[in-house]
Length: 89
Image (tube, rainbow, N blue to C red; front, side):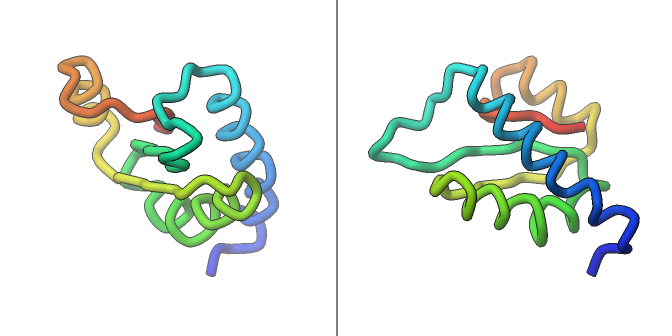
């Protein structure tokens, strides 16, 4: 479980993810119904236990998350080896 202090920011994180997805051109089509999020490894517990499930419940999209180091993630995106709909670092 997350500490009470961190949990209070969960709605804000979910809102930010929804905003990013709404503003970005999503690759996910209505038939696919999934969103790929690449995030910093330090956010693993928060993303997989709280944000991901909350996002799926709120949007109906399947959440697919992958944790990597921030610099590695940025380089994977730059080299087009990963193409997430959202990147959180």
